[in-house]
Image 1 (tube, rainbow, N blue to C red):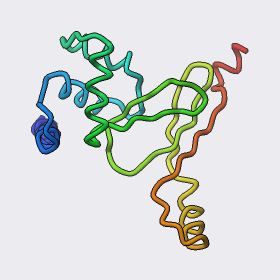
Image 2: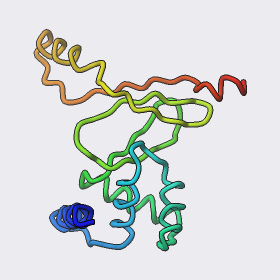
Image 3: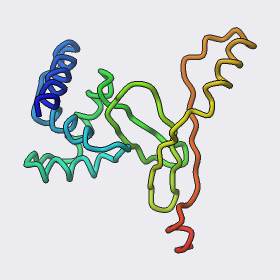
Image 4: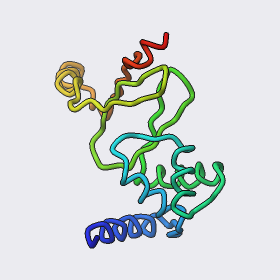
Length: 147
């Protein structure tokens, strides 16, 4: 319990350092996202907050999420196949996902298959590569049966 409170205090400090007010909505989102090891959409965040006694509308959730994204507490994940956006707590590093096009299930890849390639490409081209993105799309076993 003490560890959780210390971590929440760290997020409070980050918000203050960036000139944001520490609100129950923002802290509720951070606390909720800490419970997920995969990205979730704003609707699920909104429902989770309401279950925790912080009932706010979806547009307020989006505004709070965007402020948390701007200061680097939350990471926004856009997939190029559609307009659906997911959010996760920024735990450092980056991740790649296998995305089911049927049910939106996300599976995090344990390794970055592009890290060695990125280093070699930077060396060859003399570019200072700052990031990359890899989206893998398909249908999970359950959705394959439904099709």
